[in-house]
Length: 394
Figure: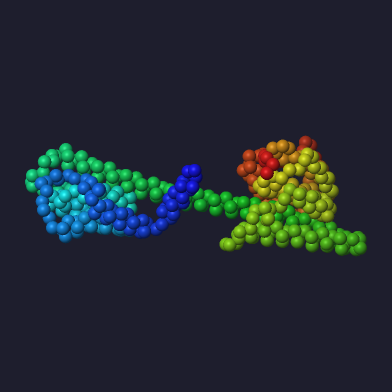
């Protein structure tokens, strides 16, 4: 029964927060003005002089009331002007013994706005207001105010607390803006690192495969010309795969790119394509899949794909032609990947290595709460990459 009103209230509050500050200030000034002339609440307001009531003209009274309400329309844009005008009208009202009015609440709102929004000449304005208040207290005492020094001091302390509350809000907003700026920088750096890892994985893997396939095609050109076409087709297929993945990554960088992650991320089912591509490059790969494959989150499937991709890339680079075993084991809450290349590394690698692949891959897996271990087999008889990637079925 309350869901409808609560939803409407939440919508209204969200809409109010989204309004420009000038609009909200104007609404506040208008509301204060209406309340100041509403008989029910018109007599409510802060009072420090308590001088005998004097008959003042309706025009003077209305002018003082408006002077304590309307400047609130610029309290955010011109807080010094706002508090100066309202404080002057408040002081004149006290000296004239003007009847209480709700408009006098404007002095409290103006002091808060000065503390919260004034950026320059804060100390000068605070000193001016303090001096003016002291002069007002002396004048009220000379005019016969029943208030004593502790009473004037207490009201001054109230104003000081309100100013400090505004100052605290101003500092909080500045700190919040700085946190948002730093968070945006961290997010941008994280996204750049992610894109760099993806570019490295895509470019390194496919270019390595194309280099190996091109070397094989060159060898076949002399020894078995009839098989050269197969090697060239393998190079062409590899190039097309590289272009497809690069286009997907570049789509992330487009200013208006709204492509879904699932549409541009290699799925777990495409691990078979990696194995087939490695085989076409001359790498004998044995692929084993254990357990029931289940749909996982995009990040988990992408990490699994990248682990196999990087391991096969390293095998093509450093152990071309050596037997390689790929094992993907599906668990209930995780995926285990193991890629083992048997045999010593080649004396001359097919392509130079920058050493970034496994480091970036380890970071990717750890971000998902998993672990990746890589290293040589005993006796320098091969290389092993093992990863445990947590991920419940999606």
